[in-house]
Length: 340
Image (cartoon, rainbow, N blue to C red):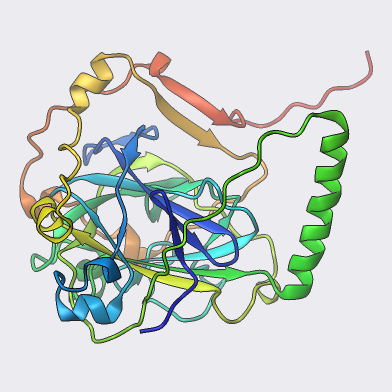
């Protein structure tokens, strides 16, 4: 096994090149309709497989990476907050790209685009399956064919989640860093500096490819929400040809988590109707300067987990208009002003 330079800081994965990824628990959306962004309800705990080498299957040890506990039908989203430098991040759902719907590739492509651009893309809640929408990531067991991997490829070989980051070419990254230093110097002249930011954690993450072996769980899809997957406005040649870092994320059931780590898994997800009745917020995010990627046929045709596992018995109560909070830009065409 080889080190990848990926580290854990708290529950955040820090990939070389500045990319940061956290897995966030959230409310599961109903399969019908299109909804605002559900809230974050805390981070999934993340642990390195290598720390539990005597308690995990041999094939997990070969693949390395990290693991996190997830309940059947639990929903999640990926947060990229804390990304420090421009990065192209590939997100694989098993062996399928969550952005393009194509088979997992060792290289970046733009036709179709098979990565998200950080930090412009603040998060990813699901697969790119509609115009200005995504279908929510929802955990399902392997073996039923309900995962995105199973539906797109016809087999469930890997399960889990793959992440691979690419940095800018060294010359472009150096130029970007100089511009950032100049901007920071200008900000420091007008604003007192805050406290220093702590360094990354020191746990090395092995992620050798190894033999194909299923994780305990994979990701299918749930309901649709309003979210754009942004088109890269840089030429493909701006990115390094070789990845800066990679990591495999095993999804394990709560009983497996307890057996392997000895830790109590997080409590089961919060009741959706109770959350909405309490008047707690939902969100809408809009970036007026970014262009949304068109969805691909393969991902548009993925069926929700309810069609495989049966009706969703968890009650649903839609948020009121006052509960939905806009983030970043307001949607709509901007209006220019003139002389008064």
